[in-house]
Length: 196
Image (cartoon, rainbow, N blue to C red; front, side, top):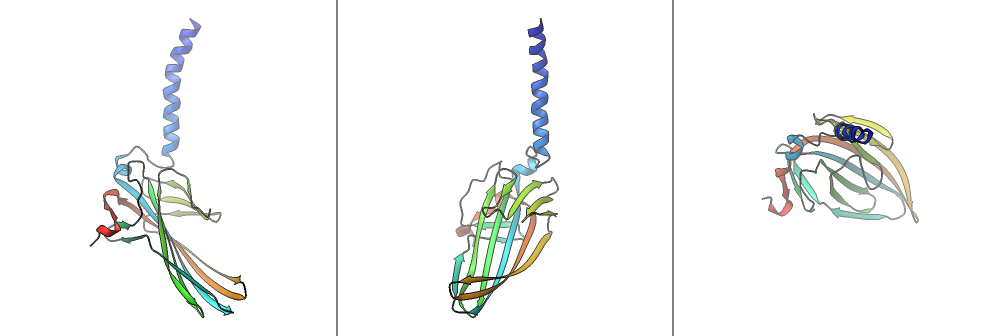
């Protein structure tokens, strides 16, 4: 009798535990809604660096733009290939531009990363996406600073520093902007070459 009671109890307890797990996941992002099946959240970190050569000779060239977008149309154009499925929660774009005074080089570099699971951390560990709310609000952490952005909102920081490359001394002024573009349709992710 005791074994039968235990089996019946497990029949009630196991589904309850599964429900609790799904609810706890749902606090991070609403996995099971139709909206997340059709849409993804687009977030971008854009860095603009200005380098001034103080002493010596120095050059740097960057030129690897991998994506572009039309914010008005919520159209994302990419050269990169990744899987677009129901598990795609967000896409993280990272763009860096460099201008140089007193030296040679510069350019623009950018890349996209699909996000299928949260929390997500960038390769350099500088930015972490912790949570996405149903209204598109995101909870981020940049270099240990907590950031909350609603769709359309930006966060900006400017910093200056000096680097030494051999006999060259370069003064950098860097502006970093993180923007939450909100939800865009997955059907509007296009191959870069197919855009006219």
